[in-house]
Length: 289
Image (cartoon, rainbow, N blue to C red; front, top):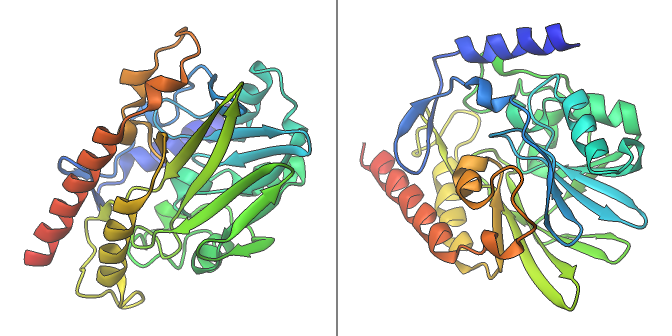
């Protein structure tokens, strides 16, 4: 399995045709080893834990009815995530629900494998369901086979403002289309002793570099969707902000391996606002071109 994972990573590292617009600049989609490098798992706040890699985030929500995993990383990541979960003292088999911010291979690459290992149900926005089911082949811009991943069918389709109820945990699904057709952010409350935190796991609306906001052949409304998302994300109220990529919310500035438990380290409204401004500027620049 390790050899298979390394070979998959090499394919990603050799890719150079696609670009992503991140908050600061346009960069090639050439994942570094940090995209698959293990990062010590830790408790973020209450029953919410980090079980992802150095760059690709995976989140575990622990409940008495079973656990929820959000995002699964690149293809071949399933054993790494299993190790992360078990290091925290939880059973991998207790994962009962799989969610994702978006259906690109760096966030759902191991979803089929983890579903097979745990029997968990997959919930995904209806606009991303087809792409998940065909392993990325219907993506509107990432059409090279290097971006494909093991396909898997969703068990439940989500829509804007659907509430995922799992015991006392209630997660609101916010449809933030553009990056993918069904890109989704998650908003929920976490209890920590006598305090409650409103947590946002955001899918930041970065633009795949070959995207034409005037419209793509299989996604004619992509520009309108980005405009909607950038506006909608300005109005979200939260205490703690996280994202699909660690670098998007400066994880490594807020938490270093061995740091004590500190939920307040992830309070960062100014950082969120600045990231949205930069992404909006990238959107306007793309429009002008």
